[in-house]
Length: 170
Image 1 (cartoon, helix red, strand yellow):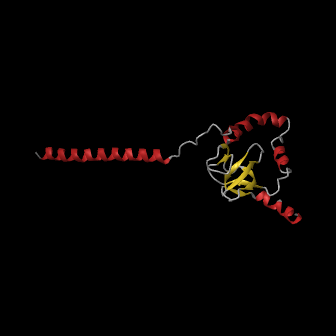
Image 2 (cartoon, helix red, strand yellow):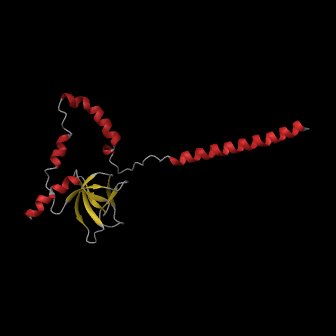
Image 3 (cartoon, helix red, strand yellow):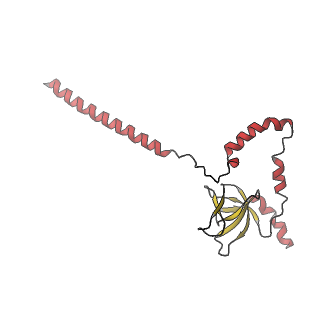
């Protein structure tokens, strides 16, 4: 009789241990599943040439032919961009919003989207709306122009030194 009571108590503890362990394992599975961030979505209007993976792959595939010819073709566009004069009142900036920005055709939230700008992408701020809530920007490559919400860009340090000599002349 004593052994049957002992078996019964041991069975109860074993059942509780199994149920508790399986519950803990299930909870850890769902916690780990929700803790990882999903992959960044790719939209139809994204420029795949500007993604880091694609540019690294291009650099690897083109590095052999460039080493035999000239290794500086990628540096020449940067040097060509700097001498371009900016329109009056415009300045260079960088996108500070981590998700990037959507370019709008007009300075309104309801306006049609005409493109997008990625995080830390260099832009040229052309003007501000009359209520100072929107900024008209142009991509530094000159491909696209549009309006973005003000406060999502900041003046780049490179350009802060350049406009200062121009202001005393004006």
